[in-house]
Amino acid sequence: MDNFIRVISKFALEGLNAQALQDAALAAKQTLESGSGAGNDFLGWLHLPSSIDEQQLQAIEKSAEQLRSECEYVITIGIGGSYLGAKAVIEALNDHFAAYKSGNGPKVLFAGNNIGEDYLYDLMDLVRGHKFGIIVISKSGTTTEPAIAFRLFKEMLEKQEGKEFAQRNIIAVTDARRGALRGLATQEGYATYVIPDDVGGRFSVLTPVGLLPIAVAGFDIRALVAGAVEMEKDGDEQVLNYAIARNALYQNGKKIEILVNFVPRLHFLAEWWKQLYGESEGKDHKGIFPASVDFTTDLHSMGQWIQDGERTIFETVVSVGDQQHEVIIPSDDEDLDGLNYIAGKNVDYVNKMAELGTRLAHIDGGVPNLLITVPALTERYLGQLIYFFEKGCGVSGYMLGVNPFNQPGVEAYKKNMFALLEKPGHEEATAAIKARLKQ
Image 1 (tube, rainbow, N blue to C red):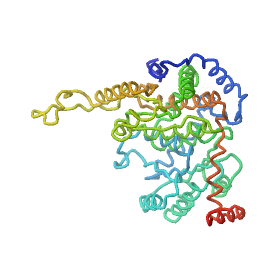
Image 2: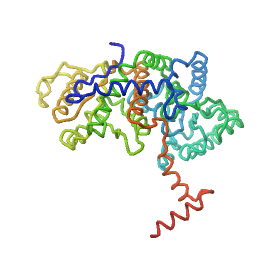
Image 3: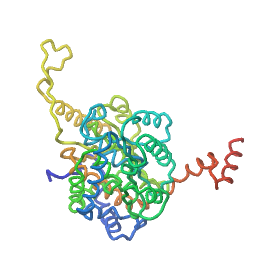
Image 4: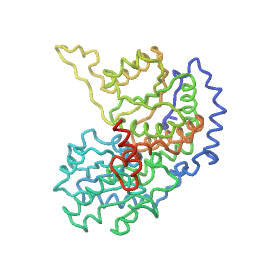
């Protein structure tokens, strides 16, 4: 198991009868794997890693090489699951300051995940005068945030580099047959990849949605997929441990799960995880609220609340083993900062002691603590971790009694936004909202 992520629940389940949930977890796993539960038309991710073949990988690598050969920047346009998985993996593997360094291929940037005018202006200003490509990700091509960004950057690219360059360096990841983006891609002759009909956005990181941007960033998608295959084949014990623990805690009043990391590279992995679990479980007025913190940074802001606040929380700590580099703390003759007691130690040793000390303090403060150990931040182990969280989400959602694969609440804000923007077809809603706001 040294080459596998593990779940340790020793300090999470003290005083709880988690064994009572064993049968429920096995039943939920059976429901998931047999395809007999709610949302069973969105289970394409379940055996996705082992179904990815050599032809698919070669095609993605070839497209990535095309963008890498001609572009200084590649803008990935998408929202939610259409960008978070790729962003999580790229950030987890990248040099922290890659944006400020030259070489190593194009910089992968992201747009279409907000409606920030200054964000779009600044991004357009950055790529102006530079060769850039676009990966646009949308099943429909009409989702507001990415559609706005794509319209802006498509026009900019065509004016700046010409139609032929744009046609070579715009790649659409979209529906196989339908939708505005599929129609445009066919019309313009863009290279395309398919978002499978049976894979929801938040489960799509191991499809071209995630694999193409990750490959453009220069990382090994084969190792990423191989790690996911390992978890698909041999990870059920870890998946069940996690699903049982979090449901046992939820049933005992722990309504908030805080995903904790002590490695800055994992910030966006937590953002991806929050969408995965929040959108999958937050239904029928049920569900654990997924939150996240970056330690030790947030110990100086959120640490007080976690230590002494309302006891409705539990922590899941993602603990990374080996670091990529070593930095040794030097000795100082005057020792004015009082650090000579750790002189000669590497920085990660200090970080690991901060991690253990924090876990013990929070446990003593009444915060149950789950631990997920990851041997190192490599493509292989990230592949394991991604699939682990995906399957854990499916099992946990069925244990909770919800459909983990739909998201009916997501549409509520859109109806109001379209009405306020006076989008054609929303006249009645527009009138109703205007009347309401006058009251």
